[in-house]
Image (cartoon, rainbow, N blue to C red):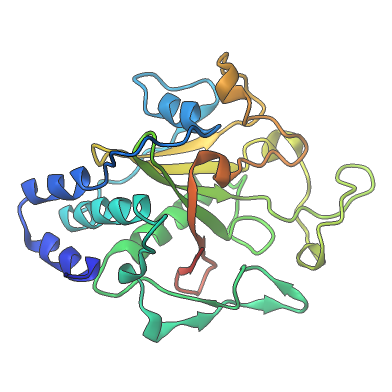
Length: 264
C-alpha cells in the first residue's frame, strides 16, 4: 500500500476530483463518541459568527497546499489507529530549545514536516500572522505564543489546531499569584485579564475542506449550554484541545526555528 506521503505527491499533481476521495475516506461507520467540544465546533462551522469568536481572514492557499491539507485532515482523523508520520521527516529530527531547567516541548526532540510538502511553511505562516492580527496583544515568545495542539473530531469530521498564547505570565502577587514552574522564570509577560481571556485561537479544516481561523473569547457567553461548558476558566482561560477531539500532535514554533511536531 502506498504511504500517505506518496499519495500526497500524487495528489499535488492530480485533479481536484481526486481530493474528494481523500475526504470521503475520512468517514467511518462507527459512531463517534460525544465530546464537550462538538457543539463548539458546530457553532464555528455555522452560517453566522458565534458570540464567542472573531473570524481571522486567511490568505488563499495554493491548490497544492489545499490538496495536502485535505490529506493531512484525513490522516489526523485516522490517527487513533495510524499516526500521520508520513508527513514528517525523521531524518531531520532536531532538539527543541531548552531554557535552563525549562523544556517547552513534551519531547526533547521534534520532527519537521517533510520538505516535499508545503504544510510546514503553511502553519509557520499562521503562527507569524497572529501577532500582527491581534495588534500586538499576542507575541511569538517562549512565554507567550510558541505552540499549538493538533486535534481530530470524528463527530464533525473536523481537524484543527488550538493555539495557546499567554502560556507563562509573570508571577505577580497582586495580579497573577501562580507558580507555573521553571518555564515561568524570568517571564516579563504581564497578566491582563481582558487579554488573557483571548489567549486561544483555533484553526479548522472541515469535511468540505474549508479552512477557517478564529480568535476565541473565553469569557463570552454563547447562550448554548453545551458550548459555554468549555468556555470560561478564569484566570487561565484555557481551551483544552482534549475537549475538542482526539489529540494528535503538538506544534512548536519560535522565530529562527523550523516548525517542529511532536506526536502523541
